[in-house]
Amino acid sequence: MAKFHLQFYKNNFKLKIMNFNIKSILNIACVLAISLATFSCSEDDTTSSTPSESNYRPYHLVIGSSPTGESETYIQGTTVEELNDPNKTFTFNGFGREVPSTRTARVYTSNDGETVYNLNYGGGDIAKYDYISGQNYDLLLTTDIQAVMGTLYPRWTKIDDNYAMLHNVTTENIYEDPADETSPYIRTKATVTLARVDLNTMSVLENASFEFPYNEDESTEGIYTFRIDAPVITNGKLYYGVAKRFYDALTGEVGDMVYDNVETLVVDYPSLENETSIVSTLAQGSTNGYRTPVSHKDELGDTYQLITAGDASIMKISNGAYDSSYGKFDIKSLLGHNAEANTGWFYVGNGIGYIPVLNTDLGDNESSNWDVVRVDVYNKTAVKMNIPLDLWLRQYQWASVIDGKLYMALASLGGVGNVYIFDPSSTSADGYTKGATLQTGTTDASYIGLF
Image (tube, rainbow, N blue to C red; front, side, top):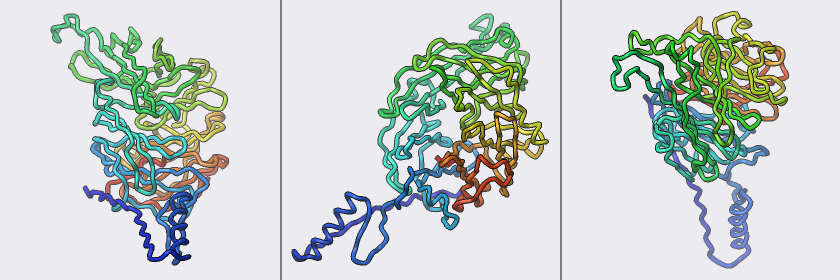
């Protein structure tokens, strides 16, 4: 696998004061202007190495070096003007700051784009970086979270600009004789661990551990919760998506899970108490996603949740329960082929969002058979966007809403692509424009987000 080589650049300013004269005074004034006003002046009008002016916050392109589990992650910052510029080309070939992670990094940014947060998945720590310019990021704080979470592999979600949630599930098979695994199997116990992180200090605040509220019928059948992820906060409660597994007591192995419902874990926030769950049989599948937001609260306070294992569909949660009157928004049936949306989705506003969808008739998660689908959750419509790329979006994590439009970094695996700017007001499959060109730099790299 080709390696990225980091390059670091440092601004050097030289000031020669030969005589106290007008020229020297002008040179000194110029250096002071660079320090105080972040623009440059010189006798020969050379190009400044400071970031270009922008009326927007900075944004960050992130790439994974490989579609396998052991993927290196790199990041670089940019401006909205550059993202929109069709003459601009971004590359990670010999450029980009590595974001440490044993496996693909889990990245978030502050609302103003000046700070980057990372979960070192597999390394057991979280880190905070100050964005300087280009590929230059300063590490500010690192916090070991293994002791609190009990694993090197927790997941996390940024809740708002001040806090994030760490979460993990551990499981244990319970037997009639606790000391004898050959005795009759009773059920599998799932223990949830949660911790709230202060993003200002990167310190852990509240943390809690409890048994997942299990269903007796499912438990006797060997069905148990093995993962939660992608929470959304509504009316003082966290709503966590849930994934389940099936333990086959006859073989002693994990078997094929067949869902007959959807479920969501609910806990009070920020106390992390009073755990319960809500269930609906109107849809079947998991609701935890992969590395992407799964549930979004709309402008009316309702939550729309993507089914991420099972047929591509969306459920509505209102007043703390699944909304039976809304039923199931069956996206798969509108697309005309078998489809899963097993990563997550991006909400723009007024009921409009965009979903990475895998065409399972053409291949599994490892194949480049992904589409971006525009959905209207109010009117239950779905339109597959005409994107002329072979997309692999299994690890895609983030897209950004800028001026009411959705910006996605899309490129073929190991190939080229563009910044795609989707206009939610358009119902056309061609309702987008293309901005800057994106190069991947290696044959197996893929863009995983625009943050």
